[in-house]
Amino acid sequence: GDREFDEFEKEIFLFLGIGIWQTISKIHRPLPLVLPILLDEIEEDNLNLLDSLKNLSEKKFIDRIGQIIDSYPQPAILFYIVDTLIEDVETEISSEKLGLMFIHLKIVIESFQKAIAFKKENFQTK
Image (cartoon, rainbow, N blue to C red; front, top):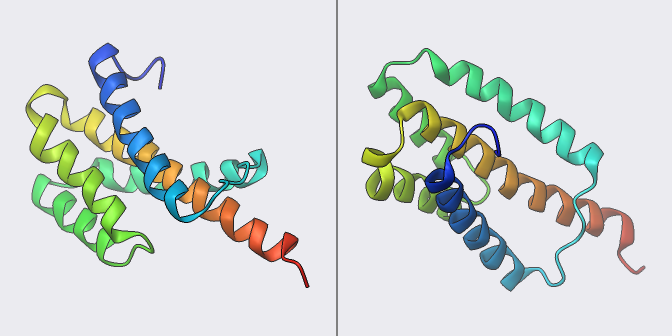
């Protein structure tokens, strides 16, 4: 996000990213390393989602985000992100940047989830 966000936006992103990390690390200690191959797949999926959201009207955009939250494996974390972005900083960040920040933070959540699942699948003691 170095090129996409200004200093204020980076601070918001960092604040929310740390919140995600702290929330997930309370349940899964230690957090496993996110492998680049997992991250590449997650980024591609989410950037495709971002492309599909770009041309939606504000109402359709909000409806689609609600659908994503409702079907998400970690709905409380994702709702917290959306609520913070919309309620607390909406007036200070453009809607385009809000969408980009949402996608980047969603990538953070999914990276941790995939790394945790990968670790469970491949390194459980039998």
